[in-house]
Amino acid sequence: MSILITGATGYIGSSLTFKLADRGHDVRILCRQKPAAGVYERPNITVVRGDINDPASLADALKGVDHVYHMAAFARLWARDKDTFRRINVEGTRNVLEAARNAGVKKLVYTSTAGVIGPSNGEPMREDRPRITGFFNQYESTKSESESLALEYSANGLPVVITNPSRVYGPGLDTVSNPVTKIVERYVKGDWKVIPGSGNDVGSYCYVEDVVDGHIGAMEKGRGGERYIMGGVNATFNELIATVSRLSGVQQKMWHLPFPLIKAFSHLQMGLSSLTGRSPLITPDWVAKYEFDWALDSGKAERELGYRIRPLEEGIAETIAWIRENRPA
Image (cartoon, rainbow, N blue to C red; front, side, top):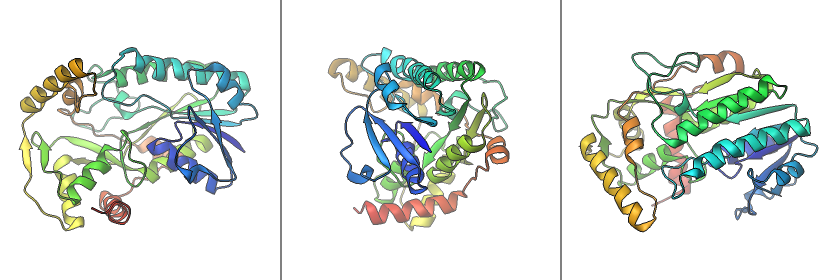
């Protein structure tokens, strides 16, 4: 089976690429430049030069392809050009969907985000529950627009399945999509000593291998026109840090940083960005979303796709072991 993956050099995409290759599939990865990492040099992994905003390159890349995983996205806090989010997340997705339909692709799995589902209010969010707030940032809003495009194409003959991963962690590439693992690493090395707010806000923490398997399940079993939350263990930030401390054996004094202070810092960062053109460490719109709970219900993916939620203790233990072996201080 021939498979094309966009975003294959990202955190989740790279793990998916290797797993599919290990299973014997012919995997093509769409890249604007040849990846520097030699890990992609395998007999059944082909690097195809192209860009999701270049329809001609997509048409070439999709020749003879059966299945597509569209994972490429602009998943950052900020862009110097505000149109970047729309150009990549919306128009790029439109280009991929159109090219896939023209090429006669049998099925496409589109990776969205649980940020589109929205925060929770007393009970975990499901795919069919209405969002309780507006969107907090351009990443969420443009991913929501691209989901609408995916559903439109699915209704018109191209089977598209949407996945909504939450806060993914675990071994893998060091990218902007892997902040939870970075927090774990910094805590283990004694560099993370801050808890935002009270630390009682809830997030849904999912292990990267489970999310990768969930994507494969979405391709094999997912229903076109449906979205599937791929969340994890619903836990507070305090519980996350306590788990890391217990399993790593590292104990240190943690400081609670009030949200008003974090907001003030984020506005200062935005001011500096306007002067220097450098990306801020954090932005006000991203601070706002973390004042809410983000508990998720992945029951639909568990029932229909065989999705598995790894216990937090197991996933964190494996992550700590990987950090200590691969990223020593």
